[in-house]
Length: 98
Length: 184
Image (cartoon, rainbow over all chains, first blue to last red):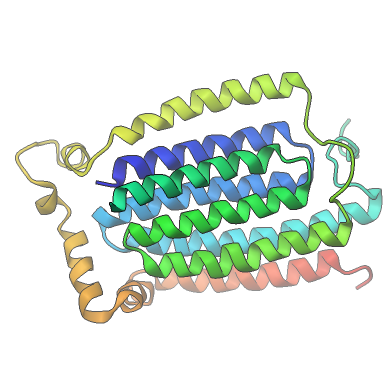
C-alpha cells in the first residue's frame, strides 16, 4: 500500500519546486527547481504504473529524455547569457523588459 | 518494512529538496538535488521499477546533474551575493505552494481500492480484477526480466514516441552546440 505515501511525497516535492522557482533569481538554481518538479511527476507515474501496467514507467523514460534535452539546451542558453552580461542573476537580465 | 523504508526515503527526498531551494551556494543546492534524486531512485526500487531506478541514477543523478555542476563551476558561481528574492516573493510563493500542496496532498489518501472505484464507478470489483494489466505486466516481468518487460511495449506500442525522442535529442544536440559556441 505505497500508493498514498508516494502521491503525498510527490505532491510535497512538486510544491517545493514551485516555491524554488518563485523565490530564487539564479537561473541555474531555477533550472534545478524545474528538474525537482519533473522528478515529483515521475514519482507519480511510477507509483501508478504498479496498477496500470508498464506504460507509466515508459512515460518516465520519455520525461527523462525531455529533461536531459532541456537541461542541455537551457544550460547552453545560460552560458550564452553569461557571456553577454557576466551574470546569471535574472534581475540583471532585463533586456526584453519594455 | 518496505513501507517504513519508503517513507524514510521520501522524508530524505523532501528534506533535501527543501535544502536545495534555500541554499545560497548553487553548488550546494546541486548536491542536495543529487541526494533527492538518489532517494527517489531508492523509492523506485521499492515501487518495483528497478529499470527506472537505474536510469534515474545513471541519467539524472549522473549525466544531468554533472552537466549542472560543470556549468556552475565553469561560471564560478559558488561565491556571490544572495540570489533569494524579497519577502513579497516569499509570501507569494509560500501561499501558492501551500494552496497547491494541500490540493495535491489530498491525493495521499488514495489506495488501490479507491482508484478502482473511481475508474469503474462500482465497488463490487476488487482492485486486482480492475487492474489486471498490472498483474499481466508483473507476470511478464517474471518471465522476461525487468528490462524485457519495459522494452516490449517500448518497441511496439510506444515505437513512434520513442523515435520522436531521438529526433528531439538530435535537435537538442545541435541547438546546444550552436548556442554555446562562441563563433560558428
